[in-house]
Length: 167
Image 1 (cartoon, rainbow, N blue to C red):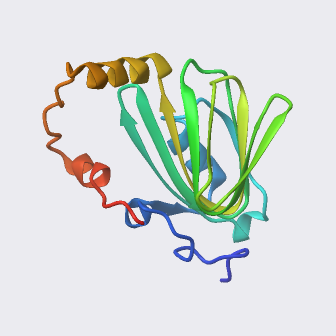
Image 2 (image 1 turned 90 degrees about the vertical axis):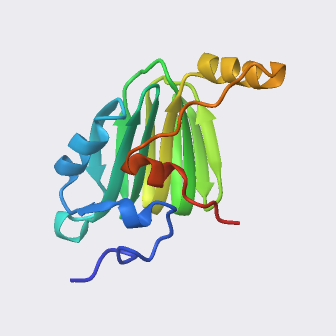
């Protein structure tokens, strides 16, 4: 069966080999909802043609959702974390209030946790939630020389966190 616009695996994503595939928006919504304040996810192409690959990483105060897929829209509820959306391939738009940020490969946007939406047009993205005060505290510790690295992670997650960066 042909996929809408791009076949799975043709879009680039640094975690692509770790993503799991689905053709069911409800299955994807349940999984992504474990780390995102997801209100709902809609497939923007007919159901038989819709495809999505995703993975979630639930670290304390650092939820991460990686996804690649055909056109979709997800809407998120208000949340105390701030969010960073990175586009690895394709195009996506972040909408919040009356603002809209059109993103393409290599772009990213940071915004507060007020209700927001991500509209992907056959895209590859990573969404990361973070506490800006915690980030500021860590930066100040680094600047003052008071920061000590955390102990090494001993789990399969370490493999995900230490992927080489692409230049």
